[in-house]
Length: 109
Image (cartoon, rainbow, N blue to C red; front, side):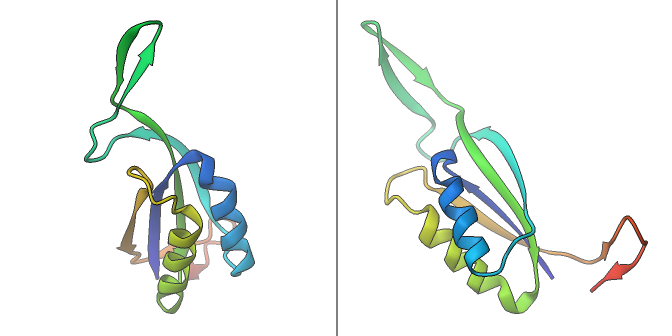
C-alpha cells in the first residue's frame, strides 16, 4: 500500500474530490494547510502599498491506496487540480508498512 499526500489549491478541492470519487477513490482525509513553494509567496497591492504574503492557503489530501492504483490516483489528481499556473501543488507518495482498523484491531493489507 502507498500513502498519497497531495498539496493543491483550495479552489480546486471540489473538482479533485469529485474526480477521485468518479474513479472509485472514496476514502481520504482533507486538511487546510498553509505553505509556499519555489515562488516564495506572492505580492499584493493593497491601499496603495505593497504587501507580501509568503504563506499561502492550500488543501492537503491524504489517502492510502493499493500499489496497483497509485498511477490511476496520481493521474486523476493531476488532471483535476491543474490550472497551468505556478502554485498548482505537489504530490508525494510514501510506502505504508501496516494499517490497522481501530474498531476491530484487524490488520489491513
